[in-house]
Length: 592
Image 1 (cartoon, helix red, strand yellow):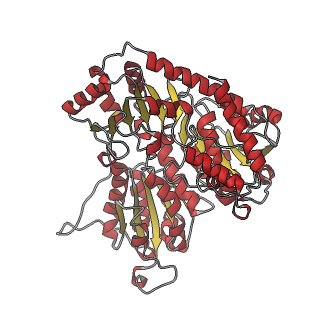
Image 2: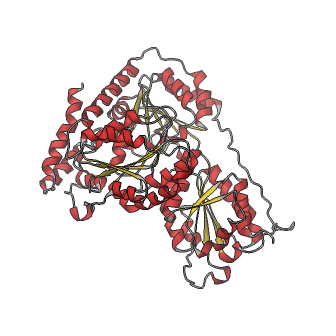
Image 3: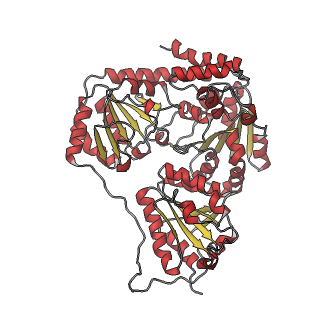
């Protein structure tokens, strides 16, 4: 039998280096599913939901640098992919979606499950979304989808009608209108012009108080960043997507920036006279220097992201590593180290503040205590994953990234639910590395409960089975509750915020995994030791206090006014909020 279009597409994806495709079946992709019988070099990994598949493909891209691939049927299956694909789009990750469609003769007839898929995907896959209408298209559609995803670090989509999938594949004829393509992509070496690099060096050399902000685009330039930071006597703050770029045990690394950031990062940006931004498009201008306060230099591979977060004096389009290598010979080591010493003092003080906050009592358990106890127990080369919620605050601040670790979260879309799907993909991409995913009860109930079934199904295939899923059980959609109070000035709306109770640890046991539940501070350390020594994935359920505030690094007057407004309106936890807020701020005054 001749090769079908579906089989050709899978083989072509394999030529591009694809080993697995995350997806969920449906009759709109029957031809593609059947082709997996013939094409054994590419594995179909069934997930419990198409959103999980899209998150997993996105995580694969984030944690490997390769292109992630997901697959879904037409209509509702395609719709379910969107949230995970937007996560990839907004964090600039290469992901290809292969989607089924009704037979070509039915398109336009308002057929069952017929959706205008090009319109559906044209925003999320804005660089490339195409329908395969003839077997001769299959080669260049797969080649272009993969190449464009890699070259532009974006989402692409190939839509394949049901009947085309089962057609015999044929090469394009050698005639006018035919297209011949080939697989493979190598990233170019992109370095700015010498004069621009020299101008940037002059700006940085003139600064007396240099601050550096790095993001995921600085990955791979770790050695050069450390050298530049030393030459300039600078401190380094990290956007959340770039947490793993430099380890937190470097004394001049101030940690995260923004609402979930650290006090040293905030104070460094408030006081600096020069800003070097490398591989980051951090969006919150209120946490950057005031316009006019600092001279700015930005390095980014994507020229469209230059100069849009701060009025930069010099914009350098180039690869972070290569651009920094060109910059280093033009920099002289600053002899005055007083700025660096001030930063290092503030960083040391900040870690003391975090420890004191973590050790404070709460009812029944302080969530910061969980992360404080976890941090020194993190295995070497661990992959640290976070969801979106109040747990992300403690993940960002209290866990010390060490050299060789990786991290990922939904940095820009900031969607709930990626943590457990990310963990699934992390273990397939790096089966010999320990993985730790942190999330709240809301995200676990929304999607994690399903993704955990996938983990239970597949974990025996992994070389290292250390997979710890930390769930904060506070029966509250906690991040939004605090946003209601601090951003809107409204008391907690219990109808929208209170969650039903759920036995997270016992649910893990029901699936054949290990479940551990703690509800007191003295239980945390020993329970974590047990969890990290387990020979199977563990759900670590921590019953925590929802009224421990995720304090921002600096409380603005308008935020304080709105919080007090919410309390005056009768927030159900107003007494606890006042007590916990005072306790949380006290260590800042004591450790001066």
